[in-house]
Length: 344
Image (cartoon, rainbow, N blue to C red; front, side):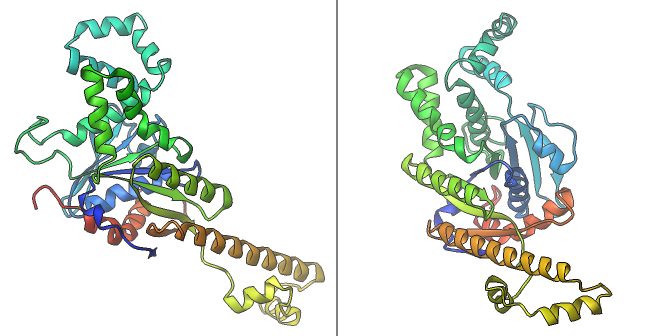
C-alpha cells in the first residue's frame, strides 16, 4: 500500500540509494527495488558497499566480487547485475584511471599504502565507494564515459550504510572537494556531489513501525534535506495486519472483551477454558491493541514528512529469492513507472 504524493522528479531519477536502521530489512528492500526497476524491462545495477554479502544471500547466488555479475534475468528481458564495492580495489582502479600508475599501484599495495588510505585516511573510504557507483552511472554501453551510446544501466540501486551514517556517507565528497581545492580528486569529488544532489539521485528510507527506527528515519530525512539531498520514499517494512477489528481493539484496550464469549470459542476449538488461559488471552489482546496504537502513531509521524509511504508485508516464511520477487511486485506501481529505459 502506498500513501502520500509520489514526487514527479522521480521521472529523472537513475540512482536509487536505499538506507535504513539495522534490522529493518534494508538489503531485502534494495533487492526488491532492483527487481521492480528491472521489470520495465531494464538493465539495473544493484550494489552493496558494506561487505556483508547481503545481496548474494538474498538471491542465493555465489558471493559477489568487484566485477559486475548478472544475478537475475527476468522473463521479460530485464536483468539485475550485482556488485560488491570494495575500497582497496576501488582505490587501485582510481589510481590507474587518473594517474596511470599501473604496476606502481600494486607496489603501493605491497607496502601497505593502500590499506592505510582505505582505513586510516578520513573520508577516503567513502569517497572511493561512492566513486565506483558514480563511474557505473557515467559509463555507456560502448564502455566509454562520454558519447552518444546509451547508458550502461537504466537504473542503479545502492544498498547504502544505515540511516545513522547516510548523511555523512553521501556528503563526504563535498567535504573532500573543499579540502583538495584543485586536481583530479577535487574534480571527481565535485562531480560526484553534483550527481548526488541532482534529481538523478533519490534516497529511500526503510523502517519498521517502532519508535527507534522511526526516530532515526525522521532524523535522516531532516539531515538529507539540510545537505541538499533528495529523500525519496519511506518504505515501512514487515507490516502485520491487526489480529482484531477496530471494535475488538477498543474493547481489548479498555479491558472489556467478553470472557464468556472467549470461553465458548476456546471450548469450540477443543481447549479447556481455564481462568489462567482466559486472563492470559485478555492480557495479550490488550498488549496487541497497545502495539497497534503505537504503530499507528509512528505511521502518522512518518506521513507528516510529506514523503510517499510504501508498506510491505511481513514475510511469514522468511526472505528468499521467491519472496523478494513478491515484494518487487508490490513496489512496481510506485517505482517502476518512473523509469525510462535506455531504448525508449
